[in-house]
Length: 231
Image (cartoon, rainbow, N blue to C red):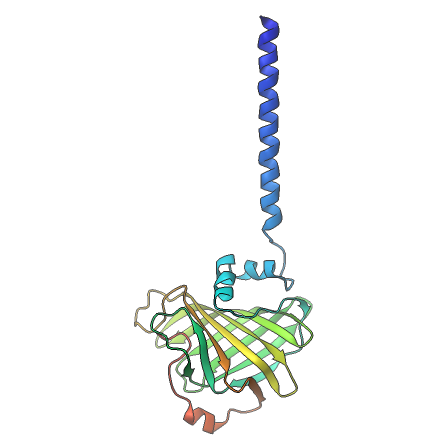
């Protein structure tokens, strides 16, 4: 009788040990699939900047992401003119639609930690964007810049995600793509912004965002339409 009881206890202990090991193994597997290290230009580290859902939203918009840890030097000021919408998840958007010309400046690129600073605006002054300590990936002439921005239309700012991809050339950025995703429109108090979790992909119509030293006043005067995050 005592022997049977001890046998049952031993069997229960074995089962509990197996269950414990399986549980630990599953935890280890989960840890291996969740990257928590510094940005290194990989897709995993991009998901660490944003979320897997944001990266999937970029994929759903057919946006090109260039991974890698040896991006080209892209410091400078560039003008996207004319700026054209090619894909969108914003209700009511019509493709193609032209947006106001956009100028952005990239500075303080550091390829050791893959960071870069950004400032941009529509030439008609309808939207201003700023972000510091954002990231860059790529290799060869291909690059992608990842930004968490504060965007301003009217009086109330919104939190947005802004991604720029292209190929650096001596004249500027070829085959430029810009993804503009709304993260948090702050309740959209003035009814200015696109809905949360929607976004747009835009390109330079002539396939080259030229590097410039000063803003062309003719471009500023002829710029019209609505801004990237305006509904």
